[in-house]
Image (cartoon, rainbow, N blue to C red; front, side, top):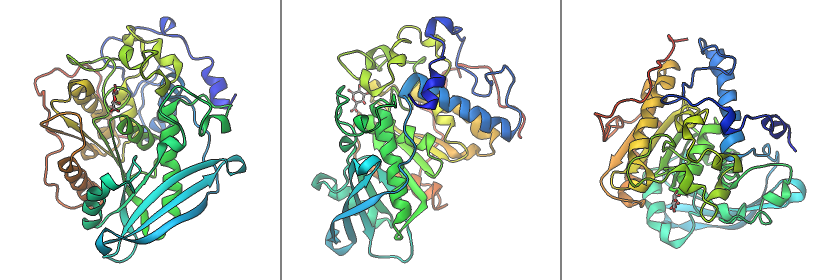
Length: 380
Ligand code: GTR
């Protein structure tokens, strides 16, 4: 058992935790005092991370250190607009972790390019229009095959789980770890500026993008798309027809995405010592913009708005008020070309300081009460 897991063994069970009225206060430290300084927040950030990993996602191994890059393909692509690289990243004990990754680097423009990191195998044919659009906007597009690390099933005998048997990470954490490996890789690629990376993913991959972006402080912009339960959506505030904690952790559904402790809070969400605004707040003072479909009820638009609102005091406290954003478009649960255009606008504005073409503060339910009464401490 890893050290953090040994510590999380002592985590109180749901019934031993107090029921919290409204949304938990991210500034309230475990010792009962409230965050007052930037150092306090750094300590609180560690507490929040420990809670989220202990109760919700499980613990990941550290970065494997060195990565061997096996080149599979390097060729002109997208009618000459990009060089496409397909590689296999080999790492971990005895090189047993093998993950396919891909990268499109624009041929126009000099120097290291800003990049979009998608939790997708970007080399697949159906994503070619996306690659063309991203490259045309001047970004490199990177992605990977998360199922090389963990198949989307409860089986723990494939991919990374058997390589690190001492870790209690569930699938979302395994896949988020893959994003961090991608950051290690992008750091090695001289045509990419790894300090200017925006991460995105849709739905379950959006949950992964948010988790990775919350934990990995190298990721400048975090843009989960339709991530819902376990992502940018609330467990406590759930709109009509939206996915609940109980539903997502059902044994016949997606319990294996999460640490088994999470399912214990089904019907007891008020005892969770956090809600997903804590995850979102971990991104501060970097940028998070969640992109949603107004008609995508399953992904909990109301609860996503409320998490955005409840994370804002942390961004305010850290002097990053304008780095927390949300965007709702009409329509349902898919990631369309229009959504990629939004993502490129987000990247243009928050990575490259270009003027934004959209308002990232517009609430779809402006009249709903905030659901909490605590406020940000005076600025550190
Ligand atoms: C659904 C699941 C959602 C979302 C979605 C997807 O069935 O309930 O939480 O992750 O799958 O990934 O498309």
